[in-house]
Image (tube, rainbow, N blue to C red; front, top):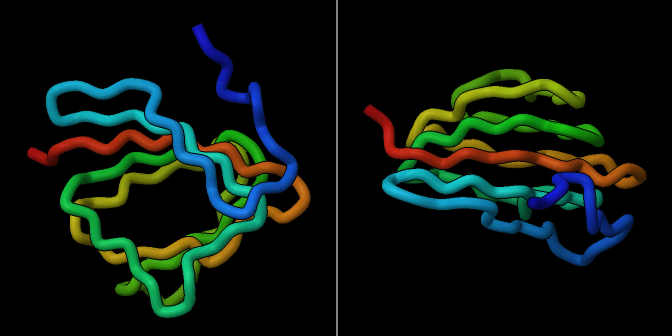
Length: 107
């Protein structure tokens, strides 16, 4: 048994990514961000779909094909289809942002 809010650092040089479970075409991760953002000019372009929920903190995501960024608060979730380019513009520098991410093969 584990707790998604245990062992949250208040500061870290890098995001902490922990695989909680994985199996046939699916991977579940806990990600803890403490103010990190994607490097300038970097875009994620993942081969699998990703469903993500923000459990604490705050974040700003940007999609390459959208005019406005998406501001996320605890409880907000979204599906990022495979190959949809996106980046993390910002995460809360004062409160750890805890994410639950589910990566899976699309239909």
